[in-house]
Structures are given as structure tokens and as C-alpha cells.
Length: 517
Ligand code: ATP
Image (cartoon, rainbow, N blue to C red):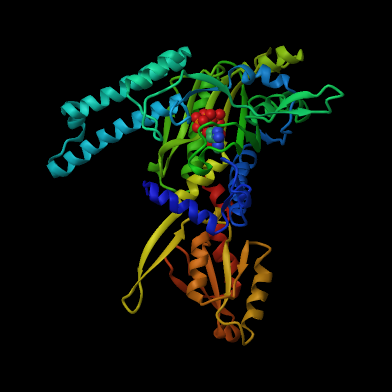
């Protein structure tokens, strides 16, 4: 599913079936801002619950909070965001389009790597079973050249970013002969820094309005509540604080649907540990988070770690969990060892002592922090892009039919079961409603009596409903229904009294969480 066409189809599907709408749609949208529709909000809520329960219920030492979006502006001075939350931007003078310099270079490197992979694929076909891929990669002249070229560009880019040498970054773009995709020219401006925070004013001007920021991450709301939670919750280190909430970034290259938005949602957990133990905890959380992802069954090969070479000013180790999106492997979640940077900064700027007395060590210290930070919208995108499947079906009469089925992990599916009376008469709608009224307390059910049963199945497949229950005349006689399984389309006849057990076994969040141990 790696094609641009498929990605376009997924975006169209999301709109058609109420997953995601462009924000302010009747006004032609607002750049990189999206609304979740009636189907999407259910999936989003289920992802949140899977994350929240895995963090807060499964770990005795992790608690949650919900901090405000508006915060004291000094917080962003202390955290470094006012001075350093920047992207290096470059404009093309002909098209007047603005790009992130590092993104232009990353895309260039990706193109070289794609060429290398094509060479490998071609050779694999040519040599068949005798193909020794490792040898080919290290000895074939073209393959070696591509690899060296990609490495050289990446090294120069990382070096320039690390040194914040924007002239070197621009020179690299010129040396790589990168052209603007719109104008096709290499007429580039200087590279400049651009701060990503949105600001607004609080209070009336007469009172002296305060310039405040829309938070660009939820993490700082956790740090500034560290003392409150530690004291009132009588928390002992190591412990964590989890939070789900909106974040805002004035992204310049806002593309790829909900991958990069200006208003998005994060699920973050900051884990406070004794100094010197942070790298051990960093490894533990990397594994814990990867397990959480793989547990959904989207395919283990779709995840990989990417270790950061250029560390943020606050980190002493950092990795991303990357997911194989339709446009390639990209960051889904970040796991960072943030040292004591944030707490120390807040201690300095607020003048309040932020220390922990460790009875085991018999000393006071500023805790170190491991952060796990995942974008809820990116998580949503990973699920829908992986679930979207087009299938060709051979009908009984030999003709070919097609269906689009969203193979969403059942526990996260927006609707768990559809309740469908075969016909709109003979007491079947009443019986179906009766069944729905019993099951609706446990599952998100959808009642549908319009159109043929085949069309109704397709509508449910398109939103990923794991089960469809059909009520027919036999139901009135023996209280049995047919239950249709989304993925196999197999149908079984079962007692109405068995439904709750059959469905909950497959769709309950509890079973999913139990697999995490
Ligand atoms: P990127 O390199 O893609 O800009 P980042 O490294 O700046 O991301 P973090 O600051 O580590 O991202 O934020 C943590 C998580 O928040 C990311 O892994 C991602 O899932 C999510 N995220 C960050 N920016 C956006 C955005 N503009 N839109 C949607 N999700 C985002």
C-alpha cells in the first residue's frame, strides 16, 4: 500500500465515511486543520482509551492529569521554546513557496535510497535464488555509490543542523541540485529560523494584556505540576505522569493529511527517575512502547526504531518509533531521555525548589525524566492507512464484486456491531431493536434497515465494523441470528443469548490490554 494513489483514496474514504473532514469545510477548509466526524471520533476515543489504560491502569506508578492549554508565558522561556523552537526555512524566489530545509534534504536522501533499493530489486530478479543481497550491496559499484552518496548528504546535513550553520545547509541544498517542486528552479533564499509557537493575548489591553502561547507540547503542563502531583499523590520515585491533550504548532510544511497538523493532540507520559538510572529506564520504555504498538496486530515489520543523531538541547538519548505510512517510514512516537533539564529550568525561573528526597538514597536531587510522546492523530493515521483494504470478491454466479474493508483492530473499531433486520416488516425491526436495546450498554451498536443486506454489509465494512447481526424470520421462531465476521465474511447461526460473549471476546479492550501483561 505504498502508493500516492492509495493515500488519496484513503483521504477520500475518510471524508466519505465520516472519519475526518477538513476543518471549516464549507469555507473551503483551513490549512492543516481537520475535524473528526461521527465515525472518526469513536476510533479516536478508543485509541485514547487504549493508551490511557495501558499507561495508568497497567502501571501502579503512573497517574494522569489534564492541565490547561494556556500557561504562564515564562514556562516557554524556561523550557527553551521561546528561543529555540524553530525550524530552518528556505524560500524559492520563483514560486514564492516556503520549505523546511531539512525536509528538502531528507526527501533528497530518500530518493537516492529508493534508487538503491530498485537496483537491489532488479538484481534479485536477475539472479533468482543465487542472489546474495548483502554481497551485492557491498560490491556492486552502483549500489555502493548510492549508499555512499546518501550517507554523505545525511552526515553533512546532521553536522550543519548540529552546528546551526544555516549557510552550510543552504550550500548542501545547492550542491545536491535540489529544485523547487513547483517552479523547477534552484533560485533559493538564505535559510532562516522560524518560531513554531502560536501566540495570543490574555486580558484587556487597558489592564496590560499578557502575551501567551498556545502550548506546542503537553509535556510542560506535566513538569509544572510535578510538585503538586508528587506531594498530593504521595508519589515515590520512580513514577510517571500521563496526559492527553491538544498541542499547536505553526508548521510551515503542513502536508500529508493528519500527519502534520497545526492543531493536533498528543499523548505524553513523563517518567521521573533517580539520576544515573535514566538510560536504563529509557531502554525499558522503548521496549514497553514498541510492545504496545505491536500488540495491535498491524504487522511487526511496519515498526522500526530511529535513533536521533542530533539531540534536542534537553536530551541525552532519543529514539523515534517509526511507522510504515503510505508515504514511507516516518516518526510516530518519540522516546526521549530529557535529563533534569526541564525541572531544573522551572526551578530556576519560578524560584520554587523542585527536589525530591529519596529515602533509599538518603539524599535530595532533581529527578531525571524519560518521556514517551505520541501524536494521537498520527496514531489514527497509522491505523486507518494500514486498515484500508480493497478486495475483489467472486460472487456465486461467477461475477466479480469489490469491497473496501477497514481492517481496524476490533477493540478500536468505531462501531462494534451492526444490527440489521432482513426486511422492514413482519416484526423483524421490532425484534432487532429489542436485541439492540440489550447490547447497547456493552457495545457501540448501529441499527440499519435501509437498502439490501449486501449494501448494508458494505457500509459496515467501510467503517470497519467487526460484526453484523442479521435478524430474519427464523429469529422470531428460535431466537437465533446470523453473525457475519468482517474479515472473513463467514456467517454463523448463533443464539441471541450467546452474542454478548462472542462479540466481547473479540472486541473488548480488556483482552487487548491483557495481552500486554
Ligand atoms: P517531526 O519531526 O515530525 O516534526 P517532532 O520530532 O517535532 O516531529 P515531537 O516534538 O517529538 O515531534 O512530538 C511528539 C509527537 O507528536 C510526534 O512523534 C508526533 O507523533 C506528534 N506530532 C508532532 N508534531 C505534529 C504535528 N504537527 N501534527 C501531528 N502530530 C504531530
